[in-house]
Structures are given as C-alpha cells and as structure tokens.
Amino acid sequence: MKLTFEDFKPGHFGTFGPHHVSREDIISFASEFDPQPMHLDDEAANRSMLKGLSGSGWHMCALLMRICWDGFIHNIASAGAPGVDEVRWVSPLRPGDDLTVSVDVIETRESKSRPDVGFVHIKNDMRNASGQTLMLATLPLMVLRRSAASAS
Amino acid sequence: MPYFEDVKIGDRREIGSFTFTAENIKAFAAKFDPQPFHLDEEAGRKSVFGGLAASGWHVAAANMKLLVANFKRESAEVIARGEKPVVSGPSPGFRELKWLKPVLAGDTLTYASEVVSKRTLESRPEWGLVSFLDTGTNQRDELAFSFIAQGFMQRRPTKTA
Image (tube, rainbow over all chains, first blue to last red; front, side, top):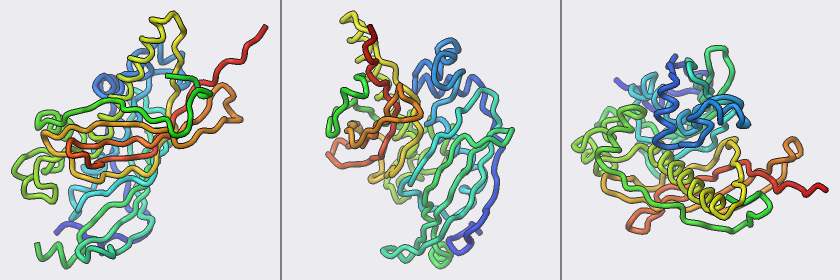
C-alpha cells in the first residue's frame, strides 16, 4: 500500500540519497541544456563568479527529482506536482559531490476543488557530503487521499 | 545581452522553440524522472495526462537550453560589431514555477522572457539583479509553463579618465 495524503504530518519526513555526481554527469547535462562555459570548461569556470567548474542549477533540480523519486515518491500515491514555490541556488554543485536531500513537511492541506487529493507542501534541503546546503526547494506535492487510493 | 542599465521593465522577447519527441522525453525521464507516464506511451495514455508526457523538469531545462543559445547568438553579433560581449552571471534561483498544461510527445513550446523587475545590489556593485517572467506556450497557443527567473547582469562600467 502506497503512502497517501493522510500519512503525511508536519515535521521531518526523511533524508534521501546519497547520489554521486561525476564530472562527466555535470558536463553531459550542461552540454545538452545549459552550455555555459562555467559548466563546461575549467579555465572559464575559474574566472567565473563561482570560481571553478560547477553544475547547472537546472541539473540540481533534475537531480532533486531523481533523488526524491528513488527515495520516496515512487512509494506514494502521487497525483503529480502543479509547480514549485521557490528554488534557491545557495552553493555550486561540484564534480564528485555526493548529494543527499533532507525533506520536511511544512503543511498539509485538503484540496477544495478535488475531494480525491490533498496538497503536501515540502521543503527540500539538498546538501553535499560535508553538509553544506547547495539548493533549497519548496513545493507542493499532490497526493491521493486514502479513500481515493483504495478505490482505484 | 545588454548591460543591466539597458534592460527595461516590460521588455519581452521570444527566445526560441523546442519540440518534445517520444525519444527526448524518454531519454530525460530515464535519467532524472522515471515515472511510468514519462517513459511509456501506454502508461501515459492511461494517466491523467492522456499521452506520453514530458517531465516538468525537462520542460524547464529546454527553456534554459534556448536561453543559452539565444545569449550566444547575441554575443556573436556583438563581437562581429567589434564590441566586447557582456558576461552573464549565475542565478540565485527562481520562484512561482507553474506546470499549467501537460507537454506531450509531438508538442512544440515557444518560450519567451519578459523583464518584470530589476534592482541594484549594495553587496555586488558590479552586478544588478533582474527578474523575468519566462513562459512556454504550445502550438495550440495555450500557456503550458511559466516561472519567475532571476539573473545577475553586469552593470555598465563607469568611464574613468
């Protein structure tokens, strides 16, 4: 039985990962979606504001999805996500980082328009192995209510 | 790309189009978002999306891809005129990202970016922070994707004697 809306309570939900990010991963994502010199080339990266090769912020977002999918989203009666409230890119993603994501439930709210789902607002803190926060993301998950999940 | 001082609130430009194919949808999903409706046509048809649907993060990454291509085109034009291209800075993040319509295999989104606010930074006098409303509109003219992007832009250097 997958987790449903009623299983989420405000507070710490869990920490997921680690997920290793190689230099090749950073360059591969950047080559396709964000080919700026600071994500591709050491010399250019050393001259940039971020001082050294760094991963795309959108790569971090994609990795957040992957770590959360592997960690818990595959196990919830998910109805998707309507969007993202806020993402803050706090520190750069570096080659060799081992990422973890700490997930807190901020609040849960039943949907006014859809009796079959509720919103679970979560805050994700993506950190490297030394515990430094790289990205903070707050977003609502849409999760089926228990009655709807057991009916389907 | 202009300097911070050249950017005006309300400035809007189209930055390009991206077509989502079954192949590129599945490739992105396999790496980052392996939910069945992003990987398999049949699972997509049975889902709330009604077809093989692109990951929302793929929709966002395609926006960045076009922004960078656009920036490189503009920089090349500046260099061709014999001028020095302006350096773009990193972004501190974004907010209010909305996935408004499913993006299915075969859909083409046209992305646009509009300046919504700008401010100087006391902590970084060489840079200003500009906010943009970035949007993706599909071939049926439906708004499918939007968010408020932020970027550091170089300030015009003050002339010294």
